[in-house]
Length: 272
Image (cartoon, rainbow, N blue to C red; front, side, top):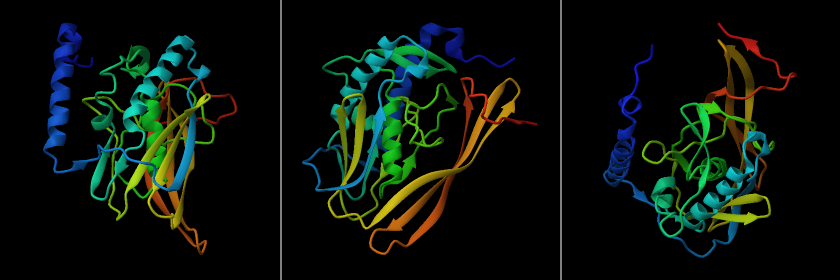
């Protein structure tokens, strides 16, 4: 039998534990020697990459009120993200920017993954921003400093043009998304809402000299006991926009559990 955490035995300690983790979380960042991006500015002239993500996902199977609440939460957080300039030598931190997004207007309860289950939670749904930002960062000159994959993929992706294995989960006090600007030019984040989509753009001070293409190989599903694990290899191709010459690099191997029934045509290997 798995040993229970103290907060599982004494649930009334949860608020104290969360407060403690958040204090340590931000104190560690104050002492880590990094300079975190905080300033917003006028839009830089060149678009290095643009993408979009559908905000409402009926595939969750949950009350769509929570989806609407998620849109509200995304818009609150975007106020802190839109226009942020990451100058040379600075690091982007999702939580350094978003931590006070609900100071003037509160978040609403929206769906989040908690202990393997989808539950409504205050400020839920912000992982859609971290997913979008991570996909943008992979197509930018920024260097990924911290990223955490979802341990469980709870429902199908709403955007089929984005491949598997390029998600990023965040949890204040526990998990952050960070990217460092190790180039010689400023890099800017732009977030915009239009219709049913949230759009993300990487803006640059200079015309991009190369194009980045992220893709995957070896997508597999393996049955492990009563569950199914997804594994995939993530690659990136760097293409010179002037000559067309390119080089390819392996980025990482991603794995997660699948928390929903797969279509019948998807092959599932039998695990050990």
